[in-house]
Image 1: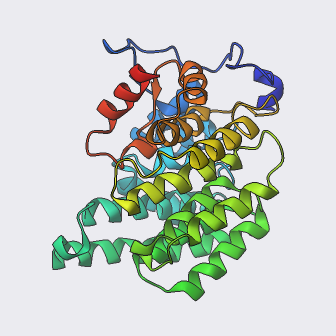
Image 2: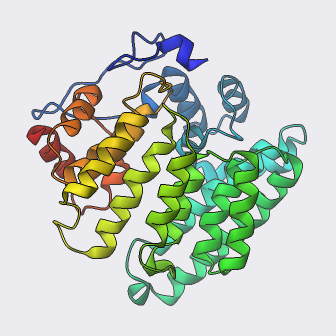
Length: 328
């Protein structure tokens, strides 16, 4: 649908009737993307922020929450959802699966908020307790949602995150990965999550995540956003290396250029709400590789639109985005 709406093959999408107006830019020409840049997603976020379950259900009509990870993430990251979504789970039998999906996903984000981004050795015993308590609720709710709606992929992708947080082990998480990929073999968010899980800091072996990403990319059709898994794999490699210039090689630059040309810059790429995050993944990876040509095309298409992910790997993400934007 969105391919027909926006058109294909353009450097930037043509006029979108649902696009949010670009807010006032900062002095450096950038701005933070809100609600995936979509008026319908904004209506959903505002309904959820008000705790209005009936309005949330109405606003969800244009979307498939069982497959659209980005729309679901807008609800998962919204503080306060945990205060009212439990009532919807208990009282709305017809839409129980949707309420469970939202609640379980929110509890994962809420759990990580309690744990914080600190290194494990710096997390207090009380933080660990709250973290695991919230993830346990998420596990139960997402498993029930998956049982009620067996065609959904989003519960399984989120169960990968909770499984990692609760240290359930490789066998459990591989089963969940298989469940997600059976439902959508090309699902980008599932692949990105698994790339994270394969990092040495989560028990993986060096090079394992990159090999997984490259194999996935090789299966992707032209113009598919799964090409972003290459960008994220190299960003993760950079994080693990803890060396600023780690990606600055001709070989890596060439691989990133190829992946960008084959996916987000390809005429068959489908413009959809939140497409800016796909471009931000490549913007960060190409910038880290000190690539000078393709990165310019990516930033020109973004036209200053900043998404927090994946720049949050930096301590000052907005400043890093603005710096890369200016250099491009």
